[in-house]
Figure 1 (cartoon, rainbow, N blue to C red):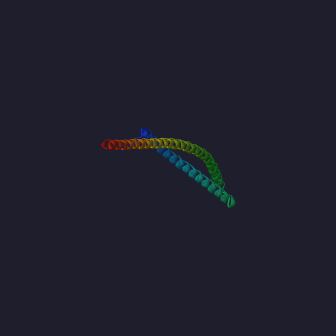
Figure 2 (tube, helix red, strand yellow):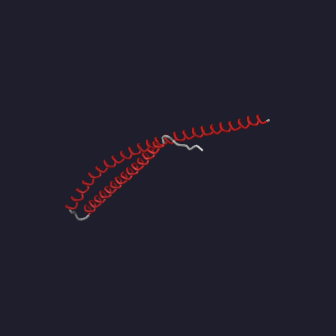
Figure 3 (tube, rainbow, N blue to C red):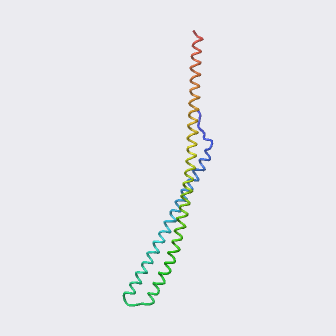
Length: 150
């Protein structure tokens, strides 16, 4: 029995590895974006805590040093939030780039899969036609052989 050998199997293997790498990179970028968003939530929570503390110090006995410390802390955290927003934008861009490369890698792998399927279908048709030819030859031989015996 004939065995199907896909001539471009090495290309298909490379495309599958590239797709796996793209999936890994996409997952890493997704995790990085999630970490940056968590850091932003932490900063916002800290800023709210300082704002609450500032309101608490303003409501009771006035402590000027404590109020100044809270205001300075809020200002610093606002700067950190602005920097964190930039980091989030960068992480989102990196995630989009990783998504695009993953889509490209998946499309290229699918193309190779389709080519392999078409090659296999061609192989099956060729095998089928050669089997039909052999059967016709056997039938023809038997028919001709029977005609010479009579």
